[in-house]
Image 1: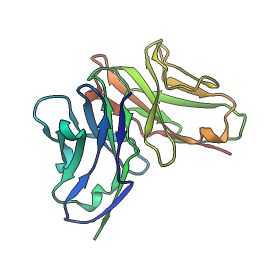
Image 2 (image 1 turned 135 degrees about the vertical axis):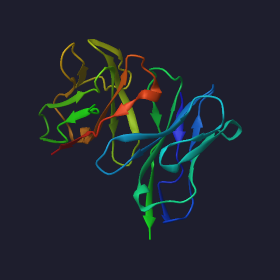
Image 3 (image 1 turned 45 degrees about the vertical axis):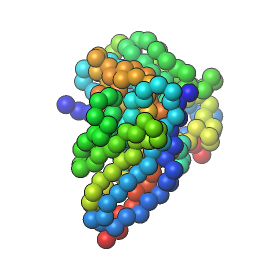
Image 4 (image 1 turned 120 degrees about the vertical axis):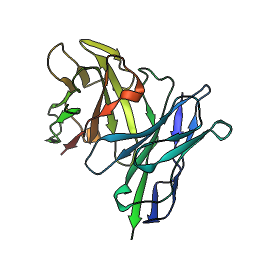
Length: 114
Length: 115
């Protein structure tokens, strides 16, 4: 069965600094990978996804992620963090692009300080 | 085009009572998923439904939990005889007829608190 590990429970960065959130997955075949963001009291919003093709994917709000098969990783990055980026970030994996349930990591909480 | 609507936003129940959580998918969406988020945990899949059919309930507890998505009206997640361990945020997601994970939209969730 597939699984997702987000090693960092909580990260604090200064506004304007760069950000990298780590995600490692376990799945034998080609994974379908997602990053979601959850603001307090809100549902999840899709930031970006990887299905195939270019391993560097661009998402909304200036986020990008890189799929590295050799490292089973799909880390999320942003060059310059804004205070409004403070939220919970979830990495997820699916076994297909269709109606297979997503398997989520436990999330990384991002705090942004001035 | 309204998003996925869940109600109530917060639900408080005493042990032994029933909890009914409602989810209205986005317009044109005929696929509904329910996920549960325990404190300090990621979302865990519970059940996947299409109109009038349960497609995958592999994540549902065997007892006390049930889900439906009738031809008309919202999808309902029903928890009978709630216990404190049922306290969690329950999220619904919907996708359109073309049904792909890239078109999955989440609601804001229902926070269930069991006293």
